[in-house]
Length: 198
Image (cartoon, rainbow, N blue to C red):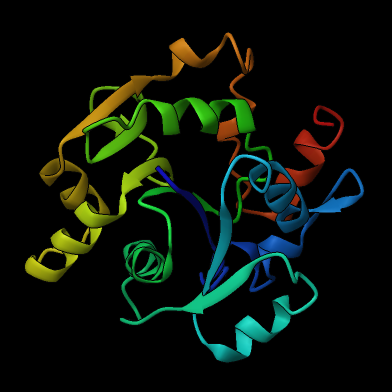
C-alpha cells in the first residue's frame, strides 16, 4: 500500500503571534525541515497543505515535496485533511500538524503498519483524548466521509470512522519519552524544549 505523509501548514498561527510556526528554528533546523527529514524516508511522498497559492510559494525551496491548497477554506484542520486526501497518491495517509517538530519516524511507521483494514489508526492517551493530527487515515475513508457529512469537526469524523486506537504507552519501545507528540504553540515553548531535543 502506497503511503503519503501530509503536513498541514495552513493555520493562521494566532497563538504564535502571527508567526509561521513551520519556520520556527529548533536546534539549527526549522520545524518543516525536521518534519520533511523524518517523513521522507518512510513515505512515498510528502505533501504540504497550505491555505492558498501565495502561501504555497513559500515552499518552493523544497523541491522534494508537493504543495496543495485548501479546497474548502475556513474549516481548520479538517479542511486541510480533505485537501490532502484529494491530492495524495497514497491510500494510507499520515497527517501531522506543522507545529509537531519532533515526529518520530519509527512511531509513524508503526501506525502505518497497523492500518490493515481499518479506516484510521489514532494514538490515544485515554478514552476520548487522542491525537487526530498525528494519525494515519485511509484516503478512501476520508474522502467518502467528507463528501457525505455536514458535521465537519475532526472529532465527529473520528467517531464515525472504523478507528484502531493505539495507546501511546505501547509506543514507548520506539519513543521512550513520547517526544513525537510534542506540540509547540508559542515561541516561548521553544526555550522550554530546545535543550531537550536533538
